[in-house]
Length: 320
Ligand code: NDP
Image (cartoon, protein in one colour):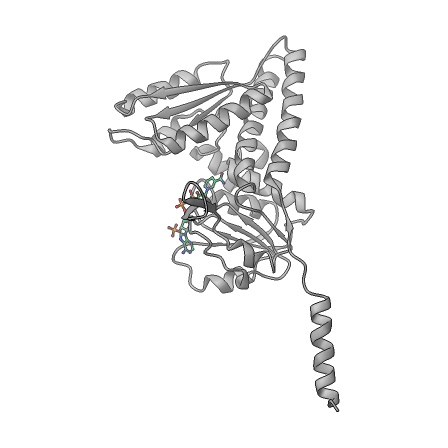
């Protein structure tokens, strides 16, 4: 005969199995970015009709010939063409001097048919380049990457409507919105403090009224910080660093990481993983982005969004 204590344990175990936590809801960047691009296509079409053939103009300035940059640029040009943005690729040789790169930036700044200019980073040059100087030379009105000091400063002060939001964090916010979870009043944790991902992500969450903790390589006890996050955004560049056990039950998990790890089962011998260990985090999170197909496609979509927005501001100023 089983004792009542054993019976109670058996009952609890069977209840637990019956109620086993379901997996997180996957937030699809592929789907969300497609919706953004379709909306932008309609807005561009409207501009063309109302302003006799007007098209938003985008220039991607590249120095050198890095394979990864070539791939990113071709993705941006393809997305722009689909939307109806007039995108041009300006490529300077590896031997270009800093003065020549600055000259190119200034000449695009002065061209009224270009509404967005991005300098593809990293610069692939044989000469010394001050990347900060070059990104800051982009006119703030055309800085659709949102990387200049002017736009970053406006964002840090909460002037969200008066600046261009950096594309990756802006895409992350769009994905968070898709979950229906409001960040206001929540505890958000960002891992990473780079100018392109972590720092602007912190600002965006803060000015959308989350209480934000930003972690970096010197932060002690990362698992404890992660465990407090209702919303977790990771941009560390460390393959599968964040383990599922660290994640708060039900949290929104946004993974910006793009890391290549060896995988003998793939023809290429490698595969792409994020900064979050997806299989284990999926067991605890409420919502999670996949890698690939999560933040990546949103980055390109938000670049297009910024370019269309810049063209709309240009029209308001010059053609109304
Ligand atoms: P950076 O290398 O510029 O920054 C990484 C940040 O992570 C730094 O702030 C660093 O801290 C922090 N960090 C590194 N290791 C740890 C650790 N062990 N614990 C806590 N913090 C850590 O990278 P990016 O911000 O440019 O990119 C981050 C990731 O996002 C990369 O995987 C990149 O490929 C990806 N990415 C994806 C994009 C997309 O479109 N999906 C776009 C841009 C980036 P510290 O400051 O102390 O060094």
